[in-house]
Length: 370
Ligand SMILES: *Cc1c(COP(=O)(O)O)cnc(C)c1O
Image (cartoon, rainbow, N blue to C red):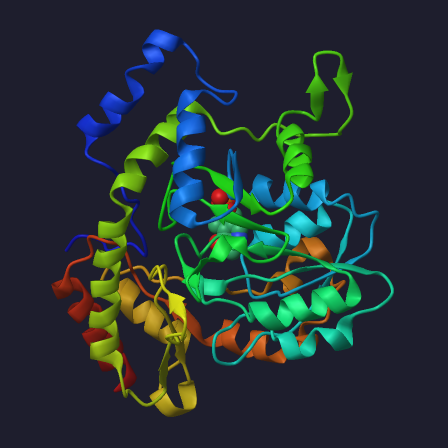
């Protein structure tokens, strides 16, 4: 039987991409904010319903440079360990100190009720994550940020195209980072973006992704190189034409999973949040071994034997990474620790067929009976 991987990149018809990149052979303009880059910028501002957007070579550099553009002079950043390595690394690589807040039991996002007790006179910002596309408690976070004068940058890598109360998810906080990596709902092969409110911040960010160059004779930022090239932008233009169909197909897959796995004792499905237009990015299940009978690892192995690849996403927590040399105490975030040991994300992509979904669910249900 063919392998079923946890995800499969969305691609436009090949002819469409070839047509999109053909003009590049006339212009010979391959990167540095070319025509495709500008076209995708405007198309994404519209689609995402955000005031401004700046495109990047990848999501990680987008987040790292967004933090740098805030010009924080050191200090503590409140965030969560239930995320991809990128979020925590972006904070640390800016010379800032992550302070880990626990997550909510029901949607796995930062527990806004626990943020205030972590604020000190060194706190400068909050970096929450819209985990699996589950939207954070944006109103509560905004209130706290205002009260204490903190910046808020969302890791919205999972939240492409979502809205909360009919507003683009990238319009909350001071800035939001999206990832357009091949494995995400929308891709530019590799790629990413920062959505932001303040134009001055945007200008700083723009220079930081181009070595901090202000003009031919003045370099006044210690920048990096994180520009999106024309071939990436062309892939984005093509994929954006099909994004609504792709998300609709993902929704069908998710609904089939939900139907098959609803009311199974010991298996908890992801929440459906009110006021959120979802992008159906991931399908995480949380397995309670005591009720279900077998562990998350055993379910993952049972699937693996049938050539089906699920992912322990997010495990381990970032506050346990070897590179951080035991600086952080994982017991500070007990809910995140518990969920990370029990969560399994199942294969999900637009073209996953219903037969495969049923098969995956049957293997999971059978494994519980052993
Ligand atoms: C994918 C991802 C990133 C990093 O994005 P890249 O485009 O791969 O650099 C950051 N945070 C989260 C939560 C992600 O899933």
